[in-house]
Length: 254
Image (cartoon, rainbow, N blue to C red; front, top):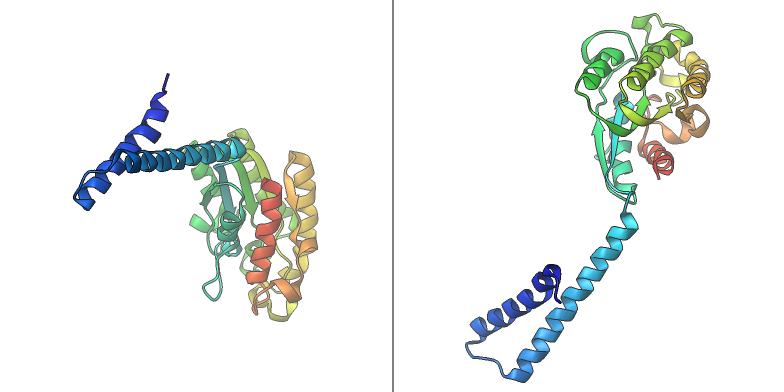
């Protein structure tokens, strides 16, 4: 007994192929030629069906991971028209990702207002009742600017903890990845001087948060090199740095 799937993927396309050929050739086909065309089309569609089913079995349960990325300019910016690390992550993923990059230039964990205040923005995301398999949090760099004090490492971690607990309380994501701010080179720190000196302390505080709330930790203070992975401003990731971050995150997701 022929299934509906077989009917619509072999017989009907084969007949359509013959009609198409007859129409453009201007004459009817002999039974022998008709047989070989039907056979060829049938084999082609059967092969396509098996290939599709094999791919579906292989990717079952591994595709279309819903990812939230919540960060600052290091999760957005690119250089020389090369992609950001979330864009690279999408390209490198072995299976499909649905990425919502809710990052913003200049964002902090809890300082300033509007889009720059991380906890305020994150509460709006939570209000929408969105659900993700992973929430990736990467904030803390802008917190150490002179205009905010700079605050202590504990105060920065306090802001990140508010974001983490908000996600947990509202079941925003099944898992969370906490990424420490990347290292900062003091040569051109500008508004970040002397805040750049706190980066290792903030990294330490984030490690404690990851343990406390069972987050996956990616410690960029230990994984990146300021001479290799930063742009000339010594603050933002260059293409090599973004590619490095994308590779690390991809390994955690898959």
